[in-house]
Image (cartoon, rainbow, N blue to C red; front, side):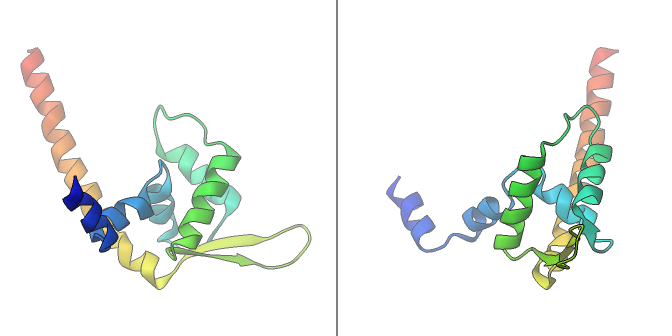
Length: 125
């Protein structure tokens, strides 16, 4: 127990990483922003399109995720100061450096989920 606390106080990179990306939608938001800046509605549409069987994201939840990603330095928020409001979100350099990590997670999931599905099918036969 004492070792874990001392590792966190020294700035454990795994704990810091986990805290930075915790949340249901953060990885998907970063993934969607890799193709360029997006407005709030475009990000929301992308999240709705992406998950089969997932419930619709509440605006408050999306706003919270975007604020957290901005605070962590992974995305940047640009407010154009016009009426009607126009705000865009884009990846920062730090956020762009994270895209290959998400791609590796995606590839790993694709390989292992496919293996799990084929194993389940074989067991059912």
